[in-house]
Length: 84
Image 1 (cartoon, rainbow, N blue to C red):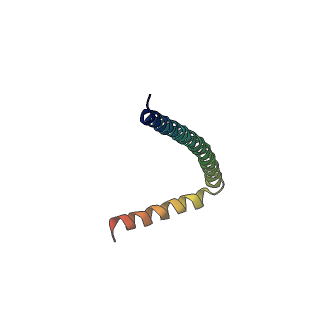
Image 2: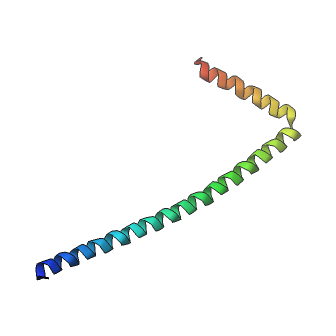
Image 3: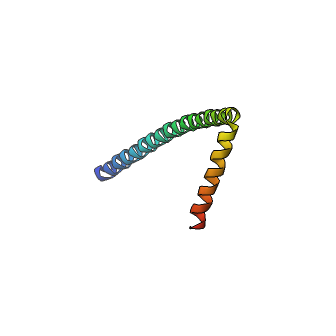
């Protein structure tokens, strides 16, 4: 093999190694990001469940106030959406 071919082979090997290392780094980062998304998703679901539980408790303890707030909210929402 002549020196030019050897240089071409070395360059090809270097580029190939770089591509493989980069692909591995991207795969690792993607895996870590996916794990964080899963973790945050669980936290949001837990927070949602706690909020729903608190709202249900509030409605049970204060049914008249809850109904009044719902009616007022519906009235305001209908006004806003009707454009008046």
